[in-house]
Image (cartoon, rainbow, N blue to C red; front, side):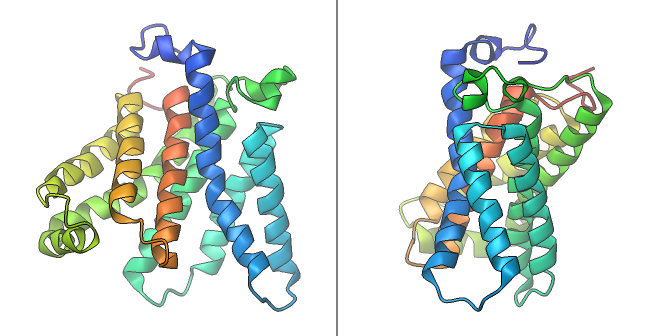
Length: 268
């Protein structure tokens, strides 16, 4: 992986036996959400709508290609564009502003994960690597274009964390009540740790400073928080939040693998 010589994580990044399973897990995390979306379309009655079925086709093909790590760069580009376009097109008239904002920004964070995947490649445990395709190798982190992709991806990645962090600061009491309601076994004092994580780590990602540490923190936060508070799977909203958070965690894995890119403090 790029620029690992002086990186504390270099032993992991340079070891296919370590980075391969990590990026495979990242690819699977980013695809589960779209499997749910696809099944939701197939199992419910919908009017004949060519746009709907075209979207379903994009999701099915994209999920298969990303999961297998085949022509991953093309698949990641298509899925990132799909996330951004559908988010803007179909969440433009929210019924509930806060619900809209959270899902809007989580969708964009998932898109950022695909952007990171596009730059990083699928990792050693992929068909691209097996076939020795260029898609298996990361792009140059000295490229201006790659730097811009990573910069935009980092910005999209942190929006949901910045929003959620400030929401916890300004609505501290209601967030504590939310925590107790959804999991009374978790001490409300952990809210302070959540605020610190959602403020400090996104700031580091945006600046591109200690980026891999921040990516690990955000991925861990997504997994732990969603397992603790979004496991009411009979509620579709909670289930979607669960899958979105795992998708964001998967994207953080590719940010960890590649680093922040050219336009960052780490690169300088």
